[in-house]
Amino acid sequence: MHLQAINVLRPIPEGGGNLLLVSDDLQYRAIARDIHGMEGVWLQSVLMVAHESGFLDRKAYAEAVYGLTAQKHGHVTLNAQVLIEIVLEDASAALDKLKIVAAFIGNETADFESHFKVAWDFVKHIWSINLPHLRKAKATSIMLDRLVGMLARFGPINETYTGLIKSSRTQPLLGEYLVSWAQGHFIDIK
Image (cartoon, rainbow, N blue to C red; front, side):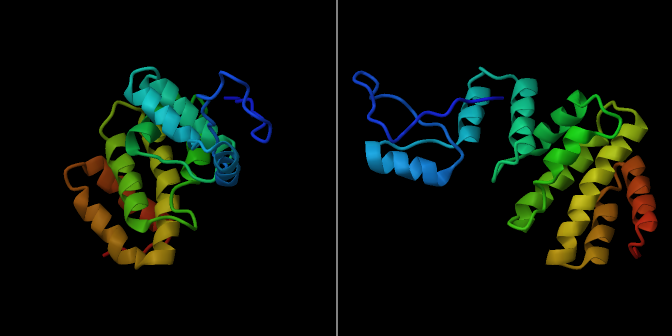
C-alpha cells in the first residue's frame, strides 16, 4: 500500500478546497489544519470506513491492516477477526505476517484489558475454525508469547494463565495446548 504525500505547506489550488489529508502523522495533520483550517484523518480510519461500507472486503481490509503494521505505523487498531483473516491469508509456514501484526499486541503503550481481550478472543476463535492443528498451534504460540509478555508487566502470570486454561474447558484441544505450552515455557500452573 503506497500513498503519495501532498505538500500541505503550499496553497490549496482553487477548486481544491475539499481535499482531505489522510496521514498517520499527527504533527503533519496539525500543520495542515493550522495552515488550511481543515482537519486531516488517520489512515486506518479511512480503511475502517471503506471496510464497513463494503468497499474493502474482509480479506482486503486485513491485508491493508497488515500493510500498516509492516510499515511500523505508530498505532494500529486490531481485532480478533482481522488477526484470523491474516492467519488464513498468510501462506508462510511460520506465520510471518501474524508475527509482524502481533508485535502491536501488548506493546509498551498497551491498554492491558483491550489487548488481552483481542488476543484471547483470537486464541479461542482460531481453535474453533477448520485449520490444521500445527497452524493453530503456531498461531496460538505467537499470541501467547505476546500475552505472557504483557502479563509479566501487568500482573501475575501463573494465576491468569491458569484462568485461561480453566476458561477453555469447552475447547479441550485448546486446553491441552495451553497446558503443554505452559509446561514448555516453564509457567507454573495449578
